[in-house]
Length: 103
Image (cartoon, rainbow, N blue to C red; front, side):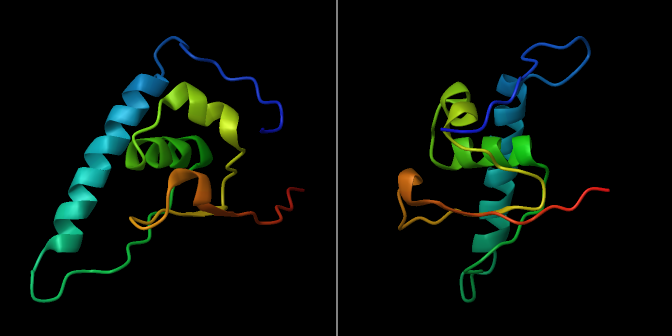
């Protein structure tokens, strides 16, 4: 379970989580095309840098999970790292937490 976070699911004028996961799916499609690129030397790793909630939507899109379930699974803060891999099921995705010092 994640620490308690209050999400605003439909704020006026803001992107909703369903819209965000659609954007994450489009992003992953572009990344796959770039990674596969030249078939003689495809990329084996790609680094994406993003904010926490969009990172969770990338995770949800990558593993084809429902966005609401993912919001409840774990906290993914800004500057943290999550490893997504074909050979690793979603429950084995690695989240590397970082210490954040906000003054």
